Length: 111
Length: 115
Image (cartoon, rainbow over all chains, first blue to last red; front, side):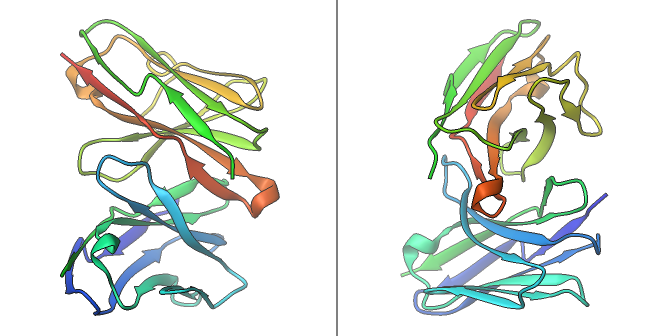
């Protein structure tokens, strides 16, 4: 089945810096790659996603890139703010229509 | 976007007992899933709840331990049977909307503690 690796496990940045989280996947048939943000005690929230026919997608301060050949995708957050502090999960949907999640990245943004 | 609710939001149960968690969506959804999230961990898929047929379980999860029902397109239940402390976790239902680009959303979760 699909295997998703996520790095780093923790990331500390200063407010205003950029943050990058990287994921790799194993199933070449995977075609949908969402990112979720989970604040402490809350449900995971879908923040952005990308499909295999697109190389990059942006939504305000958040962007996601996809390299199908290398089977990796990344989340980019610019001008980070303290409210961006959370655990971020990447995921990939493969041939069985179920999402496989990475282990998560704890992002800490210091004021 | 749809509203997904779960009941109960939390519970403390004794070992050997069973708990049924309900998931209700305010609109019809294509697929419903049940996940488990242990403290500080990622999300692990338990099973896909199929409407009108038996659920599809992931490796490591069995129907006798986690029976699932999905009587219609807006409702599902997950039962955690014969509980042990190792079942202490957050259980989340998740729904997929084919009409919204196959986006998948999560319910608020049920925090289960087994003593």
